Amino acid sequence: MGKMARIIGILMTVLAAFGFYPQSSADEFTAEDLKRWEQQFMVVVKQGEKLFHSGDLGKNRVSCDQCHPNAANTHPETYPKFQKQLGKVVKQQEMINWCIQNPLEGNPLALDDPELTAIEAYINHERRGVPMAPGKH
Amino acid sequence: MMRLNRRDFLKSTGVTILGSALPFGLVKVAFGANNPGQKFTFGYISDAHIQHLGGPKFVRNWDRGLIRAVQEANLLSPRPDFFFFGGDLAQLGTKEEIDHGLEIMSKLQGKVNYVMGEHDYYFDLGKYWESKLGPHYYSFDHKGVHFVVLNSILTHDEWTFKKWPTPMDRMLAMARLDNPEGSPFLVGKKQREWLKRDLAKVNKDVPVIVCSHSPLQKIYKGWNFWTDDAEQVLALLKPFKKVTVIYGHVHQVQYNQIGNISLHAVMATAWPWPYPKTYSQVKSYLPVLTVPMNRADPFFERDATGWQFIDWKTGHADMHYQLPNNKDRGVAYNRKTGRPEDTRYQDPKKRIPSQKHF
Image (cartoon, rainbow over all chains, first blue to last red; front, side):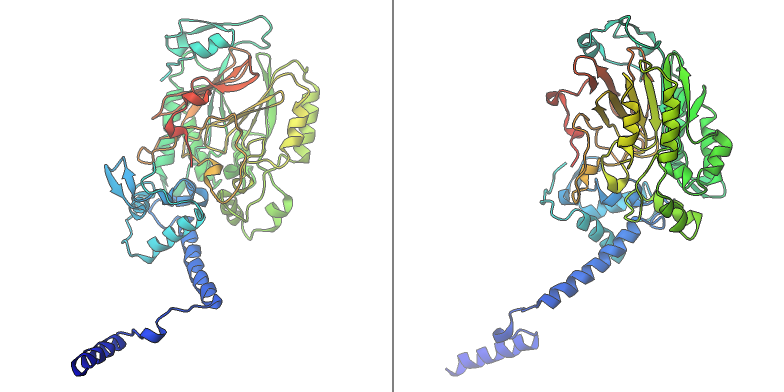
């Protein structure tokens, strides 16, 4: 008994130190939690909608919605896909940055920039419910 | 650019064509005696959206689109009788944008008839445009055809006069196509009454061509691909034997036949709009007849933009779309089916993958 019990005891101590409690580990969230998270998401979607319709994202006052009303014709469900003009498989964020650099004549955003996250959230939200179709052209 | 392959289509419509492999300017078309009106062509350029950035700067991309259309249209031979500009010369309706747009248009060889677009109108309610170009709506006769130009982008007074703190706020609100705070376009009662009086003077056998900025049909309200009193306007046109409506605003190929009325959209020189059905959250009503334009390649900035010339050689308005990076599209009236059809792609079996929008 002695040795095994000691090992289990040490293991439990280590797990506890990292926040794992075997008896209460299930993440039981409530309807209120869901509502709050949805609200948090929608705040970012709204920020994205504002950026998408703003002349400030690039340098020539052109905004994303001038070509993509309601983010239509962006096809977020198809990324990553082979972007024939770039000759490789790219993700949606790279195409958003391509648009910021070219039609909008601006500087690309870092891939973890909250503004890029917001734009992506808006685009995907406007496309909600459409089945994933990675690679589709 | 002017090379057309219309032989098969024209044969099927009972029209004889000579020298079909020649450039369009050399093609002679013979047609039956009961075609009203005389042969002529006219050019149509639309939706330039010239956008001012302050000082002498304008958005390069939109400038280039209009400059290219003007240069290409100047190569048309034989010369068209005149041109139309289908509206949205400016992006935000300012004097600078209208002046700059008109300066580019001044290089176009030939008379131009202008149509009012919402981007020309909602800053100063068309005052500067009017000072340069004349009345917002008018009519004229040309070689046996009665032309009517409507200002179809009006809306309810409440929205125009009471909702916005400044004229530029109003302009920016209308300039955003997907604005939930927008308002549906209207020809309005005053203009419909004028149209009724204008048409009363015209024999019902005379072909009528109506040019408006917004579609005189209802496709998708959320983007104002829509005119709220379209049915009332079309009702005034119904007694005429042959009516064609040509509209801008939608930046894409669209066509339809409603009774005696053929409807055609024209391309933008600035940028293409998506087809409304690609906005997956709503329903839209693109005419089933329409074979869509190719999906745009964003890496070629002129793709899915263009301009068109229209010939009245068969006694119908046949559209020739000039598209920089694609094969040119032709949409011509088919007498057998009594509706406009694409001269190459109308048969579903002949369509190509890039015409699929999703």
